[in-house]
Length: 227
Image: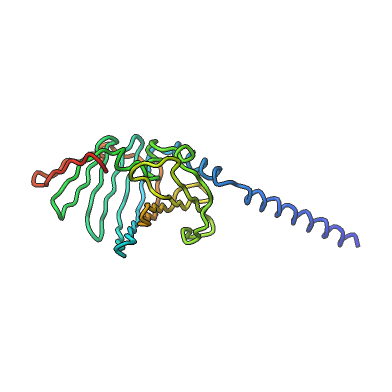
């Protein structure tokens, strides 16, 4: 009888502990997750990762997939190297941005802030954006966004409308370290740009020369005042 009571007591305490843990996990809010994501990127000086980008245009039923590697550093420094199926290069030193398409022998030069104002990963990492200041945040019901059960799905909508602002941004966030594993940008026409990040490395040493670009002498130069 004594053993039964001891077992019952232990079992009850275990169940209570599990329920408390479950409730504590369930109680985390979308804003809290967003704060933890922001905190991670505030502490991050640089990031590199492999990426797969899928862009879909709803009206034309067109979808394109690109693979490559991205480097990012504080103060607006970025470098996107598209490897396949078509080589492209996007480089910024934080002020100026270069879009280089070798197959077209063309370089477009523009303003970094205008071009990347609504690219969440870039803006959070480079210090240009604040999640809770710039967006309304809630958990997303889009489970297709998630690869595993160890991720949070966030939905961000801009607090203020600007030309070129997205209708919404979806983020898949790792529950353990709060890294952004996937970013999905949906524009007002329901066109979708999805980027999956793999092999993410934080705070690696990167020379500033990685974030500047000298156009080839035979390339056509186009200066763009906008995006």
